[in-house]
Length: 259
Image: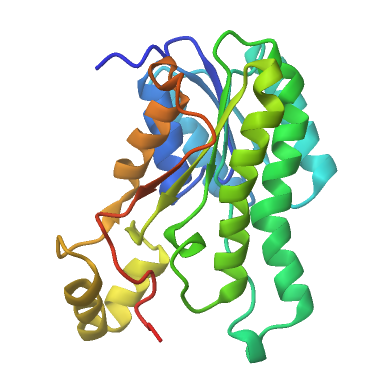
């Protein structure tokens, strides 16, 4: 299916590994120019080289997305380098601290900053460029943890906030023609990711998790998330706005530990 993304300028945060990298590659494969970022300059350079070798125009910058000024500068510099922005994906995310008694108030604030505040700051900085685009769209990467409670509540709570945020901003940014949606992946397996490390560390526990909570008997892949993101960003999805799309293979609990 032709998604109609050829020539679009896309920006993806947290795009040097896992889901973010898969999204950047998928958009590049659809003919988009891509702006990518990450905290590790070496990994960022490898990502940029790989994308450029596929013939894609690439802008890359090393930064911490929780620093508002750095994120705004990245958006402005990317728009200048790519001659505009049509699409943005707030992918960077994660959680700090452990369970309630094993985490601090700062862990919770930092988790919120990484997941929610970064997404808000990204959309605020990108709005002027998206408003000038023909088919502007934004996707925020949430998680099924945002609707299916699991340990590390600071993570799930901030991901739930993203689902609400997309619905609210879909209304607010409609005046500029900007669509905003969330995609909520289930447990995704990619090299050196958390689930890959868990599979190596505790193969029996990993298999028990698959048997209990994954009807297909496997975890999802980053590419399976990326194609959904690309569709939502495309003009083919022009009547999907303020929605949350789970990509989880009908997964049950989002945590191997359970409760």
